[in-house]
Amino acid sequence: MCASPPGAGLDCEARSRLVPERPIYRPALGKPANTGSASGSYANSAFLSANNGVGVDLTQNTNITNAGTYANSAFLAANTPSYTANSAASYANAAFTKANTAITTSGGSITGQLNVTYAPATTVAAVVNLSGANTKGGTGYSDVLQLTNSSGGATNVNKWIRLTSTGEMQVINNTYTTMLMSLSDSGDLTVAGNVLSSGVQSGYNGNRPAFRVYGAGTTNISATNTLTSSNFAAEYNQGGYLNTGTGIFTAPVGGLYQVNLIARYGGSASISAIQVQKTSGGTTTTQVYLEWAGNSTSFHMGGASVVKMSAGDTLKLIVTAGTVTFDANDCWSVAYLG
Image (cartoon, rainbow, N blue to C red; front, side):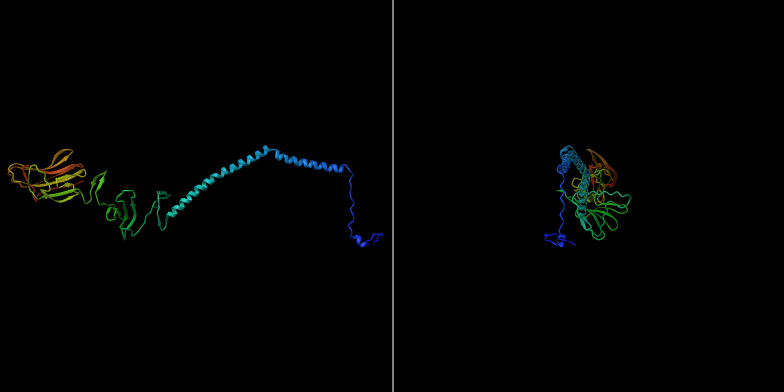
């Protein structure tokens, strides 16, 4: 039960809802207040000291900063090789991409030098394998390579290398009209022209230096005339090494030459003679010699010799005495032996 004091103006229930007033603690003046101020001062001093230590110790901070800088530099230096390696890899990838872009499975071209190195661990395959069928030569031919000289002023700039259906390797000329050389699978070599050895013609195919002439025109020749096209006709003159206008044969290559002569006595009362003469280095020697005595009863005679000649040496047929007949039954021939 609550009894309201007289004059309170509030009943018991209203007063029970009021917050009771807290008593105020009032410390004695002096020590409690001063002690709190001192504690705050010490705390502030400690705070300032701590902060001043960080700010004042510039040397320490500089050292720390420098150490960080060195560490960063070392990090960059350590990672620089990887940058270089990455650059090299980029170049390699670029080259790989270009190579694969230039040549694809459907064809392509390369501008610039191409070096191919292949060193397999075992003896297999080839560095370059060229394959083709029914190419420029037509059915059965594999033209595996065309060579072109693009230099300014060059002539006959093209050559082709091809394989036939029987495995023969051939070299074709500039206009693709003539086989220049062929090598059969059994090793037989055929050339369309002459063969040179050390710059000197040493072998011939179908055009071996040779000629044969027989009497025609003026058949009675007196001394000291050289027989020319006025006295003979050429049956053949391979290579054109006999100058029919002058009657002089010039050896295109050094070697052995077969020399043959048939002539007839001309009926002179004195000795008659005809010779095949060689001139080499300014010296003239007799190689084949036919001679008849005056009023001889012998008619056609023949002689032969194997003559060793150097390139540039010459031969000629000359009447050296009397009169000699050189008709259609007579002949002079030279052939290169080798």
